Length: 395
Image 1 (cartoon, rainbow, N blue to C red):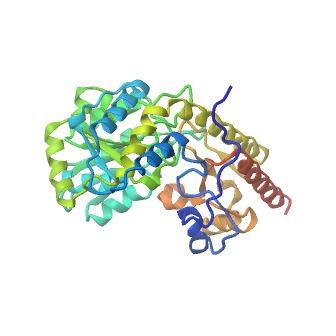
Image 2: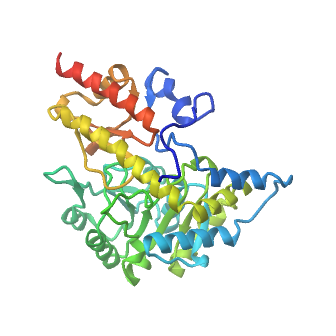
Image 3: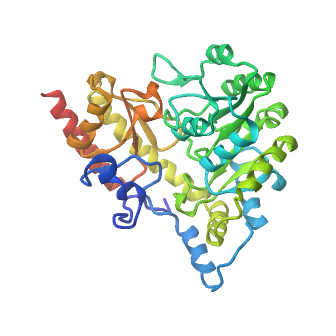
């Protein structure tokens, strides 16, 4: 019997939730189902909120250190669920993965150096590189005949030179939903080690992986891989806790750690919110069953969407998902320009999605749909999209 109920969720309208508050600005109307930004319209678990309520019984909210017990809870979680072992001294607080990416770019590269990104990918990957006046080195993913993606190793080897210093890896991948295999990651590791390239591995979606796929932490591949890896992990995606602004960075290699710390201290990351500390620790200590049931629910939502897309194969295809709650929809058969495609979803389906083109030009003709919503909301989404596609087909 399931302990947790994902059939309904609390309304977030009028709460300053980003995905709702920005609808008018982004889509020109508030009359859209917001399925874009990657947080869940699913209630943050009670055991997290209860920990916060208990902390609020103490009336002083001054400066606090992240307690060792919080890091130790995450270390134990990563060890038990992902077979990777980090040490407490390897780990640092960060308020977000994007902040950590920017610190890594400063720490491991200089102006004019090249940073590898593998598009289509989460937009801050390439925006951060350009904002730091580094050269963006694009190594686009290769789409196979079955729609799945893999690394283009030949392209990567051909583009690397002495100015290539950093690779930003998205693992599991946002937006294409891949869980990279050990063999795929080992190819990346070997190339980067041979060429003195540091790997920033964004593993924020690592807990949301669907069987039989298994997340392989980049740092767990080998001693060589561990020595070139900066790992970003956290509770934001797993437990819908982005609003707590807490994640971590793990760096085992002392030389890399020292370089990162110079930037880290200069920026003054500090230790964040005292409420975040207890929420973070409670999530990792109490969240195993909740996450297991959440994944069952998310996969049901995905399969509903997949069945719908299979009704309209001449219009839309869904990329087979292995991780995340972000569906990558191939809409190229609709023969619409990117703006027209976006307008179709906004005006005809009444949905606000992330445009594929925002993930790089390789995303042209695609849309990203966040299906991390309650069962009742998902049924409504399916109905709206079904109606819009039916009308499109019968025009």
